[in-house]
Length: 73
Image (cartoon, rainbow, N blue to C red; front, side, top):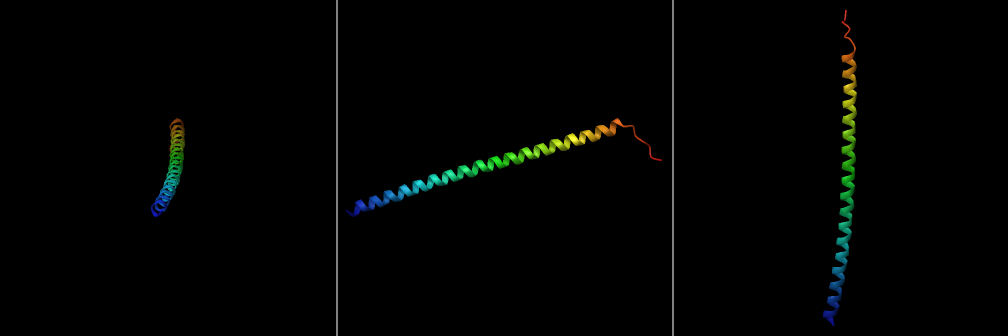
């Protein structure tokens, strides 16, 4: 009788641990996806900023080279 009770509680404990592992795995999956999404958004924001700066710089250089230089007196 004692071994049956021991086996029951051992099985119950293993079942609880298995359930806890599934919860940890799901939490890790969620954290990983969120981190990936945030990193992607940061990368896209950085890329867009660099492109905007590049286009602005190109416009300024183009406007300077198109206008004849005014000699200072």
